Structures are given as structure tokens and as C-alpha cells.
Image (cartoon, rainbow, N blue to C red; front, side, top):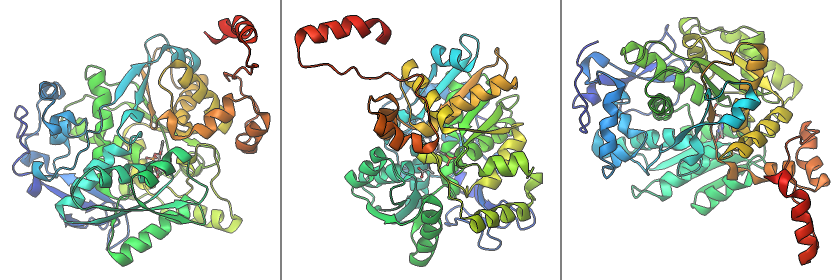
Length: 483
Ligand code: F0G
């Protein structure tokens, strides 16, 4: 390591030359300039990474140096919880950065949820990414990808989405003035209303495809290719650069100490991939002594990672992961016609595009993968809501997964565990109201069809006549239970 200095707010001068893109496949390893747009290697089709020659860059001596940025909240690049770490994602000149004030999120000690998971007091923390401007962690990645899009002069931007990527993309197009036009692809009936309403409200061209996320993903790649549209899904390596900062903020909130576990839901596997890259780089730079362990949690109706990593033992192997096992699993899915199905619609994905990068993260972070049922997800979600800010179903997979790992004894009661709450509670009110509501038919329709049979932690509304005495009686009867 060399080239250290204290932090300044200027973008490192030589950033552009010291950052490039590279194919993840070691037997290809093609490199590309930072101002090119590739959403897969044009030579071999593998994923693309953003790579830095750290020795040529000015990197901080310690993570604590970043705290100096706190004193400059009027500077948008210090205000942003992504760009105040820009020395750790130094691919963009400061005057090209596109920010809407993302990443001002919260790591909360969650005692009630900790008891549910089985962790000693003070040991369980929830990273609330729902506090982002569009209500999910996606903004961390969008700000970085839009910055790259602006650097290369892209105008039309597109994504396939289970809802949050499209919401974030729509916000970045409508809240900025750089001429971006949003085109989003969603599976019809596959996206929660909170998220769909965002895309519509923010003026995105919304293309509803008959099919699910995996179908929409396939199509958006073809369309982007044919029409030369800039792709904003997490196959875009710049998205993952932004999402690394979620981990920087977790460390920051812990006084720059490394937790024992990071637990994250797994859908398209962008987050887990980004977290792994963040830790690989921080360890390489000598800024942290070790990585935390990483647990990636699938819903059991969308369990590709669990199947491939847990059962078929596909591993990173320095970038030479066994793709024939992956292809044969996808062949089986096609032949049987099995589609992803879970109440956690955000992670209702069977063909995670970042699978290989996730393998790298699991390798570096001594990772584990688990799957949880929709029942476990909804119960964990109710616990999160009762204990604080609340989240959407997919996010609660992290808490359900932590509980599972605690029961197995892999997580110890004394461990310090951070669960990532990826999306805001209001993203999917349908699931919440079905769980807590008094309407059994609605419960059956929304949750029963997913194998959820109980609502053990439901906070049912109390139905009373429009009569003062009856209301007072009802409060006397139910008041204590509700407190
Ligand atoms: N949690 C939420 C709330 C999400 O929206 C997503 C992904 C995930 C978890 C999974 O994260 O893909 O990084 O493993 N949502 C994408 C979308 C697919 O289109 O909004 P991942």
C-alpha cells in the first residue's frame, strides 16, 4: 500500500486513469476503460468489475478520517452517505456526480428483535436502508450508476425490476436535470403497489411484461442492447460500487469496529456481491483487520443460491466457478417450468445475475447461505415492525435468517450481528395488512396461498360500533395488550 494522505474533499486527481473495468473471468480478464459501458464482457459474457490501482490513488490512512466530512453538510458530496466515502469508489470526477442526498441511513440497536433472534442485549443491529430517498437501498447504487451514465453522456436508462430498482431509477431521472429518461420493465402483477406507484408518479415509461422478473430481466438486456440504452440493473458494475458504502456506514456506526456477522437477503445478489467487494478492498488497503462473516438469505420459493451453493457446492474457485452445474440447474428449472414464488416479491428471482460475484463474497467472508419460509419472513417482519421502524417482507428475510443461524448455533448469543433492512415498510402494505388485518379471507388470499398459516405476532385492529361507550369498553378490554 502506498499513496496515503489525509482526506480532502477534492476528487483524487488521477482517479480516472487509476480506475478501469475488467472481466471477472480470469481466463479472459479483458480490460476496458472507465468511460465505456458494458453490462457483461463483450468477449466472454462474464460479469464486469470496477478495478482500482490503489497504489496510484490517494486513500485514507484510517477510516476515522472520513468523519471530517461530517462538519461539511452543505457540500452535497459530504452530505451524501455514498459520496462522502468517494475515495473508496474513485471512478468519477466530482463535477460529474449525480446525487439526490442518498445514504443517510441508520444503524439501530434493536433489543426486541435481538430477543426474538436470540442475541444478547446490544448485539443485534438493524441497518435501515429504507430511509433512502426512494425508500430502499437501491439509491446507493443508483447514484453511482447515474454518475457513470452522466460521465459517458447516456440519456435513456432502463432496468427490469421487482419494484425497488425501478422506483430508485425513476427518482434519479425525475429529481435531477441532466436529461435522463426512465424506462422500466416489470413483471405484470409481480410488483408491490408502493413501488409501482413510485415509478408511475415519477413519470417513468413503465412496461409491464407478461411474465416474472426473470423474464423482464432477459428482455431488458435485449432491448438495451438493440436500442443502445444504458442498463441500470446490478449487472452494471457501477451500481455495486455505490452499494459498497452500506458497509462503510455500518462500520462507521460501530465506531469502525467490524461486526461478527452481516446478514442480508439474497435476490439478484447485488448487495452481497458489493459487500464482499467492500471488505476485500478494505482489508487490502489495511483499513480493517478482517472481514465479518456474511450470511445470504434466500426465500425458499426463490432458492437458487441456496441450491447451487448449499446443495450443489458451487464455489468461487478464483473466478473459475463450475458454470456447467449452474447451467444444468437452470435447464432443470426451464424443463420443470418452476417459477420463483414468495411473498417477499423483491427477492422473487430464480436467476440471480450476480451469482458469481456473490460466490466471491461468500469465499472472502467465510459465508453461509440459508433459505427461510414465507411464514418465517412474515413473523420476522412483524417483530421488526413491533420493534421499530419496520420493513418490507424481503428485508425481514435477514432477521428470519439470523434467527435460523442462531438456532443452529452458528451464530453465538454473544455475536454482534447486523441485519440489513433493505426496503421501507410502506413499500408493500398489502402483505402487512393481510398479516395484521381482521379479514381472514384477505389473509388466505395474500398469505395463505404462500403457505403462511399463522399470524402469531399479529396486531389485529379492533372493530367497534360508532358508539362512545362501546369504544371506551373496547379500549379498556384491549388497551393493555396493545401497549
Ligand atoms: N431487498 C429488497 C427490498 C429488494 O428490493 C431487493 C432487490 C433485494 C432485497 C435483493 O437484493 O438483488 O441485491 O440480492 N430488488 C431488485 C429490484 C431485484 O428490482 O428492485 P439483491
